[in-house]
Structures are given as structure tokens and as C-alpha cells.
Image (cartoon, rainbow, N blue to C red):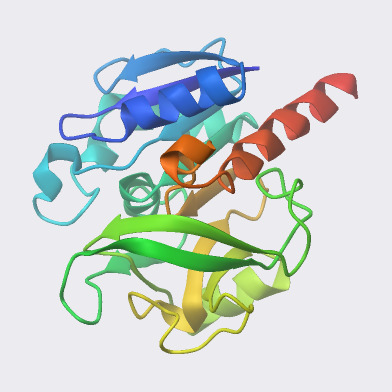
Length: 234
């Protein structure tokens, strides 16, 4: 499987994602500059965390108009896998590849700590290596991670199983205290209706080996490899 990691001015998790794919998954991976337009040859594209274009206007807003995002949209339309992490999630909502928006955290502070996630849907290309209800631990680092959407979008997400992860306690309960940013219904990660585009605020690429502090993140990347293998077999 071949991954592409998009690099924007201000990306700071591009190398983390690159190393997660290359060293922990032993998969092919290349960087894609934001001014490029060629996405041919890739099976999955990662929009990494960071502060694309300095997060001016709104986080991810300027990046959503970059040349590469126009190509990523076509890539997704053709069935390619797209994963947006933190700022990448913000870019996906700003560009319309995912519904809703990411607002300022309710405490109006930058949050950087470990949190717990409950797996809401384990039958997706991004979560098949997890079990339904399984709790994982990942770090977050964001100022605008408060996911908001209209009632119509929220009901639609629930109808097609688009909510993949929710913030929770270590025991798996969704509580106000376990929700670090005020996201609607503790939503931490969603996918599109087709099931090939996913955005999440926590950073799976930072927890792919024990040396980094945890390994739960590798299950998310590994799920994508499995999904691509299964697609190639069909």
C-alpha cells in the first residue's frame, strides 16, 4: 500500500505520520507538497496535524483552497482513502469533504494531553482492527477541536454510522469531564457516508510504538492497510 502525506506551510506532524507508516507499518510513503496536484499512484492520503498557513482566518481555512486539496477531492471521489488528523480534520471540514466544523475549545485554551476514545463503529476502513466499544488512549493537541454540526447532519451521521470515535473515560463512559473540548455528543472522529474519508482530532501517529508512550494508534493505520488489501483482493 502506498501512502501520501501532504505538507502544508505550518505542518508539524507530517514526519510523525511519515514515520508511523514507514517504520511501524512497513508501507510505502511519500510526502506531497501542498502546491502539487498529482495524487496518482497513492492508495491513501494523510492530511497531518499542525498549523497550516498559520491557522489564519480559521484553522484549515486557507489550506482548503490549496492546489493539492482540489486533487484530494478528486482522489476521494474516485474511492481513495483520506485521513485527516487534527489540523487535517479541520481542513476536511473546511473543504467540504466532511460535514460540520471545528470551533474553539469551550475553555478557550490549547489542550495538550492524553485522552481516551471509545470505538463507536468497528466496521470501517479506519477501525477494523478495533472492537466495538474498545477504549484506546491517544494524545490531543489543539485549540479548535470542538466539533459542531447541525441537527440534520448529526442525525445523518448516526444513521449511517459515521461517528467512529467518542471521547470517554478510561472505563468507556462519555461524560462532560471526559470531553476535552466540548464537542457535540463527545464526537472525536467521523467519516463520510461513502466510508473512505475520515477525520479525527486525536493523534494516532504519535502513539505507534512503546518508545513514544503507547501503541493504540497503530491499529488505526493498520485498519487502512487491511481495507486496502481487502479491496485489492476483490
